[in-house]
Image 1 (spheres, rainbow, N blue to C red):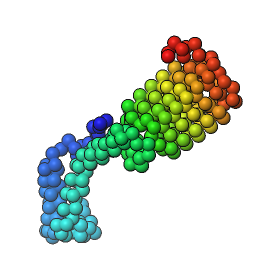
Image 2 (image 1 turned 60 degrees about the horizontal axis):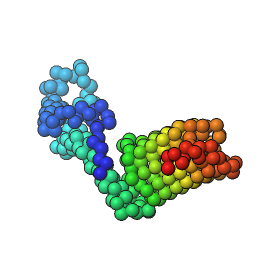
Image 3 (image 1 turned 90 degrees about the horizontal axis):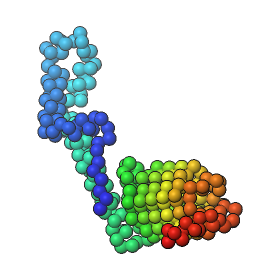
Image 4 (image 1 turned 90 degrees about the vertical axis):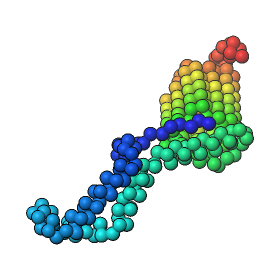
Length: 253
C-alpha cells in the first residue's frame, strides 16, 4: 500500500492543526459569548458608541441572537481540524483501490482510473505505481510523478502525460497512440515495443531510454531529439527503421 502522509495546505489550516481542538473550541465559545454580551448590553453600547456604530451593534445582535450561530462556528472549526484526517483516509482508500486492481490483474477498473486522477489532483506522488495491462486511455495526469512505475502493456491512448516524470518507468509494449508526452522525463525508461504512433513527443528527455522495436509512426518528434535514446529496429515517424544501437541491445539482453 503506497500510503502517503498528508500535510495541511493552507497556513490557517496548519495553524489550526497545531492548536488542540478543545482549546480552539473553548476560545471560540468565549469570544462569541463575549460579543453576545456586548451586543445585548445597552450601557456598554453607549460607552463604546463613539467607536462602534449603531448598525454594527445591530449586526452583532442579529448574528449572535441564538445559540445556533455559536454551534455553527464550532462546527466549522471542527471541520477544518478534521480535514487532514479525512484527506489521509481518502488517499488511503484510493491506494487500496489501485492496489486491489493490480493484485487482481484487472485491465478495466473505473475506480482505479478515478483514484489515480484524484491522487494526482491532490498533489500526491504516484511513484512505483503498479498498473501493468491497465486501461488508462485518456487519463489526465499532467506533471504527475510516475517515476519507476510499471505501465507495461497499459492502454494509454490519448493520455495526457505532459510534463510527467516517467524516469525509469516500465512502458514495454504500452499503447501510447496520440498520447501527449510533451516535456515528459523518460530518462532510463523502457519503451521496448511501445506504440507511440501520432504521439506528441516534443521536448522529451530521452536520455538512456530504450526505444527498441518501438513504433513512432507520425509521432511529433525530430530524429535528432532521440540522440540519447537506444534505437534498435525502431520505426521512426517517416517509416524508416533505425538499427543504430542494436549492438548495445544485444549486450543488454
